[in-house]
Length: 364
Image 1 (cartoon, rainbow, N blue to C red):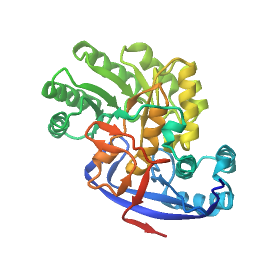
Image 2 (spheres, rainbow, N blue to C red):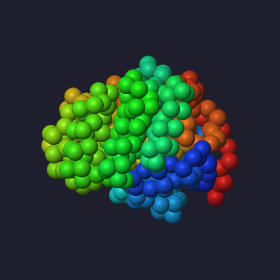
Image 3 (tube, rainbow, N blue to C red):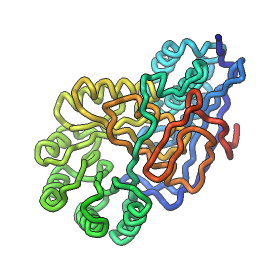
């Protein structure tokens, strides 16, 4: 059966957060993303999402819209979804960078491909896994506020907390110690400095924590993304596993980082990689090096987080899940897709990514 793309529509989706999301790089108060809707001659509809994350991907709202509307849309009209591989290669080669708009189209095409074959995407990618466990991010704030947020997360059933740090090395140590004293030893910590420490600062903090905290699972991007030697120095100086995030956008980046021994794990995000296809390639690189990976997201709704969950379910090397942004949102505009219940994420049984409706989109 042919499923030909007849139109592409763009819209803006605005969702307030429960509370401000703060990292060493930025502060966000609401999700303000571009939604892609691919329509077909069979009535099937595929959805994708792209967040403007200038400080990380370089993509802003105007560049996302221009890339999709002016450059990528003409390449897809009239094409058969059955030609998925060819379409994804065409998108990748037709435009350098612009990873977020590419990711939005990539997930919409995968959504249609799954609908074409009447099965959930993860199943078509070879997975039988349906449930995942995510951590919950604790935004950087005063020690008192972070303790309160952490206790609330533990009361809600989260067993893994991702602590945002990196703004003030001395205060970071106070923050982490205060949270550990409050929640006890049974909760795992993932520290995310978002490039906020120097190598020496990272080593000093992590060595102190190693002496007192047996449940420190990893440290994410402790130093600036381009400082590969600095990240390698940190990895060789401490026992806490180092996770590369902003240093890894492509399979080539992952191969370089792992070959140079600069990280123990890599963080895969659809918006950095350019979509599902490249995310799967990064996971394959990690597997080839015998290392594990995390899957995460930017400030996205359940729309693109659903796509990331299907990738995670399909890749055995993805053992860490950081897909908590639907929990950070004050409302859920997405009908269908994954089901989120505290730390528990359950993949749906609908075809493709399983969406039924995206509410509150202002179509352009």
